[in-house]
Image 1 (cartoon, rainbow, N blue to C red):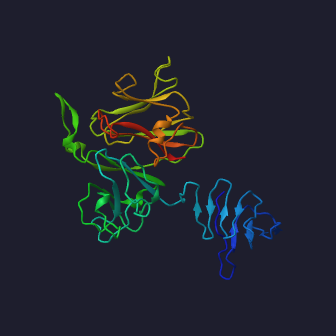
Image 2: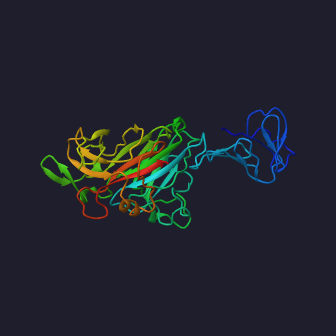
Length: 355
């Protein structure tokens, strides 16, 4: 049900008029004293309740629908995940294994005025750590044509906490004609190595130092809307010293069973996000990550379904998905240094985009 403010006229009390239902054919007085008008509006709400259709009218005049969405007196709608229709949200994923804690700055190219960082110091004291994905927040896409995104070491932010720092960013990305972005949710991912020469990459004659191609870059991708009948899954290849493409196959009974794995996501190159694959659900078996063009390539990792609790507990700040049910949208982040025997080694983490 889409709820809108229909009166909002001067002189009405604070709990003025909120549309709450279809035409009811006349006034109806509810037990708590609220009145349902002939057009379905709720008038004089003073108990915080007033529901013929199951919606709840709060004492401040906002209306909460059965699906958890909320309509304010100004007609705004807030969905259960915090999104507002016709409003864009953005989150930041830090996938640079040798990088410091990071913050993003968004604003006009050249930054003539300071902008608050993402996340702000109030939201996160230290910034975003490797393999963390920050919460969604407002994406400023109105009022200008282009936007510049810069990733900074969080340590360079002064007491003001804004983006007026004169430090050199670790990476930057200019997005042209941002007003044309018509999705509701976006992810900016920092991918690569802060010091590429310190890691080994595969070369034609064996391992060689990584180079500028494996340096830090920023990637902006649109996140899918939820599909109530299907789960949607995509892959982001962010293993910076793995120049081969990565694909994902679903094995219905795991590698120890007799069933053959079926390709879920076609291989994508380093620094690339795949398109979303849709299935009714993925609640058992495993997701197997391969290099090469099919499920017969070299296996990099097998991720059991449900996701092991040890992986979930090792990432307390990340909303790791366990199974992939209808209505869920998930990004599989392949990130870390391939071959490193440390916490910065490659891991394959399923992060919920939209639960």
